[in-house]
Image (cartoon, rainbow, N blue to C red):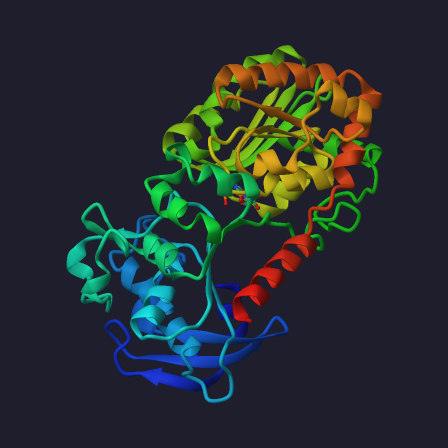
Length: 430
Ligand code: ADP
């Protein structure tokens, strides 16, 4: 939506057009935005409506969600196949089920263009009924166990996983976990068959947007002591207790089963008993929203239901610790913001959380490499034990400050990932 707003409706140079792109006319526009040359698909019958990219204004899936993303994939495949006279891509990188059909369309057209498909979260697969085969312009020959058929339905993510030249996901540990029934969400067999082409490349964060020294949303700081004024402001903003002896823990999260925040509801007494406090910002499942909202009355718990990016920056700057008790987490961003802002991450040992936080065991503390706490198994009891440990560590100011400084110095930008993607692209395109 940000790009659409910048380029303005109808702006851009038409470079291709379709009379019937999944139910209506569409154009491909060449535009310049954010310093990039972009191709935008203008298909009003699919995209010009209230709501978000993914969901209608009522918060539910669009009835034609398959066609909306099939159109995007179709046009991507056309471009890759040579639609434009002056530019043919060497490789296509597609993301999630929304672009899953792209590699399948290329294969159907007999085009040997290398493709990469990245899984950001395998919980979302884009599954639709088989009567949509024709409408989605899929060759029925692909409707098999080796193709995009999945328990009698069409699975658009599986289409990409079976057809792409390589598959990546957003952390090494999640790549391993995806091969197991506990995490593969039914696609573990498909992924195991493609094990040799599966790569885990850790995401980074935008170091310009998440920089405590220059962040306009916070009182800027370069070292842990600079957090004190941000903490005082956050305590005031959430109406918390300025005299509490323990750490101020924060949560910034979607409130869904994935994020394990129901475990936090059970484990909260350990944080409070240790003198700690909680500030939570999130939205999602009604039941979880209500449960946390009720806790707002507690003098050492502050809850904001909603989505507020500026507030999230203030929370990372003011928080002593950030809690991420996810049941599964492909990469996770908030623990990375926490590292960068000196908010010590307390994370479930899963997916990208396991790859990015160095657990403060005795050896890691002695070596000065610890950056946070990991707990396992992902249960309320293990989280509670971790919170007890957190409040104890907080009482050792030297140890605590060292963890913060080590965390703030971690490399969490995109450089390493960019180099890994570039190497993968080169290997596929040569
Ligand atoms: P997921 O993509 O599964 O929600 P990630 O940790 O990968 O989890 O990314 C979540 C992103 O959304 C982070 O940038 C986080 O700061 C942001 N976020 C989540 N909930 C909120 C909220 N209520 N207000 C502001 N930002 C939020």
